[in-house]
Length: 495
Image (cartoon, rainbow, N blue to C red):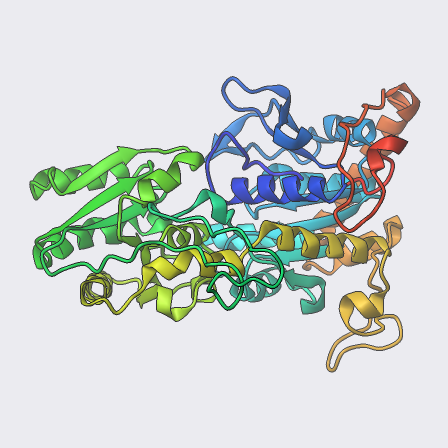
């Protein structure tokens, strides 16, 4: 797994990489993570479950993204890949420089590659145009792409001109056990066979004592977000005074930091809301649940979102979710858990008012949310589906099974036949890049040729035989009944 975005920085991409890697290890695979260094973290670190992280010392320029160099990352990347006997390189994040460069270099080394897109981008502004051209460059030669929602898939297919069949949708998930409501009750153990203990299914379900809010009970609205423009902080700044004016017995708790935090602080001072709006600053991911259970409603005013893991965590904690109807958010939770609003100040104020009224009238049973979210989302399921992608690109399962039809023999309606497994031959790679544009295609081909020449130079100056092979961390037996791969030196299932 390669990305600029990883712990100790909090965030959805960071959590996704960690949880997915941990579950793949549980399934008997070897997983390492490559990211840049953070303050106090340089070199190799081991996390829980034997997950190894390489913190590479690279210059960070903006929002934890390293300076793009194209070629300087190759020597250390090659060294790590050979030392760890990597077979598949999985990059994460459209704005992750390390992820893009790793995919480029991995293809030069003859490794299978996967890319996961976690975000949405437009098509008109300069930033989006440049990002989309970069994405088209990198994904021209990738084996498979994963998106976290169907909206994200449509966006990525259009931005990078991809064949939709080579893009899978695998959503994020949540560790429901870490996001339990405040008064959550564990389900009672199953009785002996034949006894039902008064319950038709033999086990009393877990429950959260339901308390209907009265017309004068205080309501707390929680916001946990990076305070950036794309997260809707400007909308939040404008909406909070109006919400508090319309609903007297209501207060806000805001967690997170960012450049827009100063706007929130000025709004609080101008409207004298210090006793009704609490700003607690950045919180660690393990502290998010403790903040959420202090509230009744979770407000998510984001302007763009591919998935929105935080709203799943909020629902798991028993909060009624008010969120903007943008990106992949409508796909995340069922309608009875959410109130949708357009990304406009007036609509956010109105939607929050509807949510408050619904809670006070007892029309929403938030005590049922946790068990429902627990049944909907699972990182184990995400790992199994990602593992299937790995098997598909490596040839462990046939093309007909992986893609749904025999790619080599037939093409989809209106489509063009292609091989499901990408060729590593340099001439075939150049053909794929040449079609990226009249001028860009030639520039991309030049980059690929230089990258391949650098690879040959490294193979000559620093032979593989001179690179020590790392011993693998003892791994667990595969969940589906496979043998324990730690007994044979970890030669199977390396990711």
